[in-house]
Image (cartoon, rainbow, N blue to C red; front, side, top):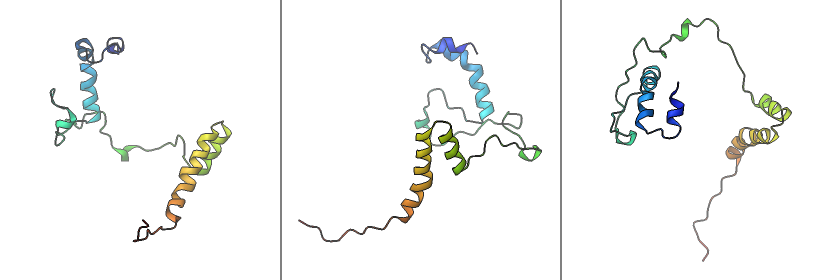
Length: 121
């Protein structure tokens, strides 16, 4: 919407807030997130108020009604490493190998270290 130019300099300005009202209302209906009171902060809330989501909101859909699901990209360990390495992201490939291939096994297989009950003075 045209709110960007109003909100970039000061997102708390009255003009920006007024411009965003239709977007915020649509977001709350679509997301199902509860609306906080104007003077409340998330820290003030002890429990979330009930959502205003109805059956007509944009996020109510029947997963069983979808006949065909399409895969966009399958994430697999070896393929991710190959894709990263072959496309110039070698550091990412190394990070994937270390944190997804080596670290999980290293932390499970590390020997248990027992500290002595006696301390050396």
